[in-house]
Amino acid sequence: MSLAEPSDRSSERSPSQTVTALLSLRELIVSGALKSGERISELAMVDRIGVSRTPLRTALVKLEQEGLIEEIPSGGYAVKAFSEADVFDAIEIRGTLEGLAARYAAERGVATMRLAELRECVAEIDTVITAGSLSEEDFEAYLRANERFHTLLMELSGSPTLRRELERVSSLPFASASAFVKAEAALPESRSILPIANEHHRAVVDAIENREGARAEAIMREHARLSYRNLMMALRNQKVLDLVPGAALIRRRS
Image (cartoon, rainbow, N blue to C red; front, side):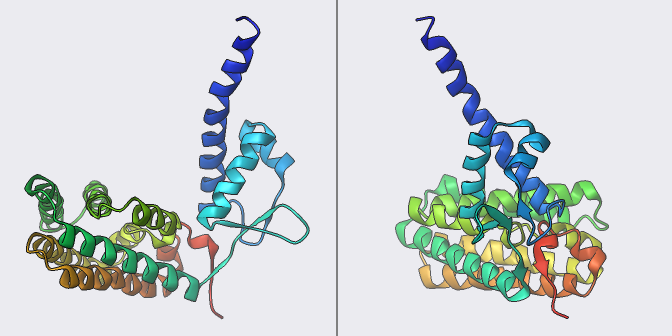
């Protein structure tokens, strides 16, 4: 029994070290501390993050699957760079998948209690955006309600396969449903989009309730297009673009 104890303790530590490595590496990449195109040195990261090489390598594989890093011919990984077209494509894919999630929810049916959870998110966002001048706390409340709405919609699709694919594309920080919330806080012209976005939320809940699959799908695809508008506004203002998670990975057109 005593011989097994060190192994047990090691297995308990390993997942924790892997999570530490994953979160730390992701933060270094998203914040721009690791530059796009930069090769990731395993030895340097072991010292910098404070984990052993095995969990670090596991984290690197996960980040490659998420699309934040890529293998390089000489071996190892480098931080991936994204063109503006890549960002637009990621947003479009997310919108397509969320549209499919909404259609599945409408066609397969959703319990009244679960629909009420979606409506609660819509009401919370209404409270925030009708409050007048929006503080940082207001935007944090908006962010929480918005993320909850999109997470619920993904769950209500009833498709684990679709949920995995949505989580994958949304792991690209600039493609997630809440990627541009901080940018919206900094751009007065972008704030006008918030009520439009919440009307989309309200309309898709109605479509799901009425079992209108095609309408629900179309609304969510159009909803994702609002991120295009926010991105275009952010690209014209570097200070605002810097507020977008993962913006340091975007290779600007000259």
